[in-house]
Amino acid sequence: MPNRTEALQLMQEWTANESLRKHMLCVETAMCAYAEKFGEDAERWSIAGLLHDFDYERYPEPPDHPLKGNEVLASLGYDEEIRTAILGHAHYTNVPRSSRMAKALFACDELCGFIVACSLVKPDKKVSSVEVSSVRKKMKDKGFARNVSREDIVDGAKELDVELDEHIRFVLDALKKNAESLGL
View 1 (spheres, helix red, strand yellow):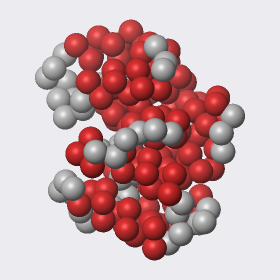
View 2 (view 1 turned 90 degrees about the vertical axis):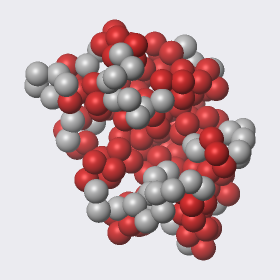
View 3 (view 1 turned 60 degrees about the horizontal axis):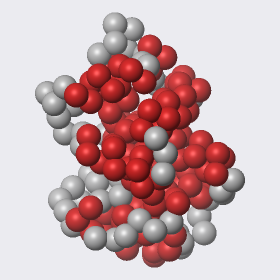
View 4 (view 1 turned 90 degrees about the horizontal axis):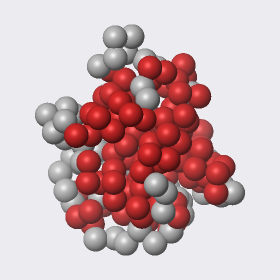
């Protein structure tokens, strides 16, 4: 199976948009942190986070994303657990999120995007200024980051069997720890 360096090269080859690249790197960071917490293989979990949207620029319409990307990943030797987790991050694929990896990917995806949006409205535009309470407050504002599904954030924490504030804190801490490399 390809390693993290090869996965990063694939993501960069397929994704020109810097915001989308940053999103995948943020999800990778959260996935790696959860893998370490759960005693899982951090590199495999990182790869799932890093590649979950790699095909989005070429195939932005459902169900092409992530189905077309899944075909590419299979042809390159990525294993079934990673590919199934990536398929499961999109509701419309109807792929069940049965592994802990799949549940974590779903739980981290929307939340990472929302936390980044929260950081961008801070005066210093830094994730270090974001707190759990400010994330929860912004979740109530339906006009803020309106494309981010609050329902997916809440459901993701439930599926991962983590209390919502704890989940927000955990992901926030992971992003803060790597803020410089993530450009946050």
